[in-house]
Length: 324
Ligand code: NAI
View 1: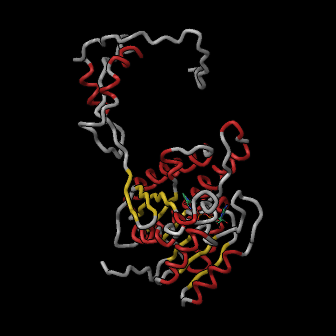
View 2: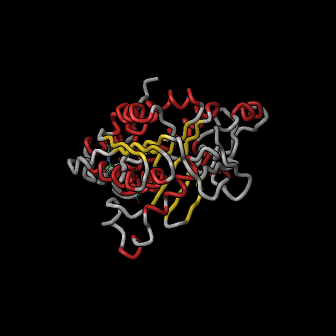
């Protein structure tokens, strides 16, 4: 692999590329031979009106570097229009960087349905719409690269961000399935979990920390993952300030219970340490456990010992979808 990866002949769509991380990606690809669609509707951080022509400035910067770029001002919710811009200007699309995003931070207590829905709409539906529109081109040319942008709030939770956390972890599941559906067409999909100085973080992090968090320090991870020589897929890369880490699922070996009436909450309580033991025999799954082998072993298991009583006395329980 060359020490300077290039993207000549590749068409890259970067959403939300008018500022922050997206702008850094767009400038990078523009400087390294790619044709770039600089998408941004120029909204405010909360998704309201803003500077509608913010993408134009980035296009000009790319052109000043000798690169090729066009602007697109659609919301990612109309992802097909963004891909259409790529097709009209450059004939196809090879790489999609789903980066556009907004925040509507509220504690659950204060969350409105509109705050909830708008976040799902921009992050999840938007990433789906752009990817869905690019997918037929990826399949036909047997090449495609997708980056979806998650967040530590999605992986680990964060106070005041139930809407954003749900959307961002949703994008992890979206990516995992894209990776599986794309594998035989040389389409890869990976997640990045960035932390970078932008208008999203400038009010919550101190200046000395922000100084180390330039968006440009996220660019090498994205640039690496989407290069044609890199076939890694289905990864989650958490990265900031030059530190690059990979996150994966871990599954405990667990406990097996005979599938009969002795498998109760009390029986589980008696062996909960085994279920929660991450010290030995864990695996790092990319698929569900082979349940059929467990089913076969089940006949040989003994009825479960009961632990302390698990009582629901005086508790009011709501069960949804409980009709069948
Ligand atoms: P930013 O606010 O600087 O940039 C986001 C861009 O997306 C803006 O230019 C905005 O106009 C655009 N945008 C918003 N809604 C859009 C829509 N519907 N259609 C098209 N464009 C739209 O934010 P930043 O920090 O660059 O964030 C980029 C991505 O990284 C976002 O998805 C964000 O959630 C994610 N992220 C950022 C972190 C950080 O530390 N900055 C941390 C974790 C995740």
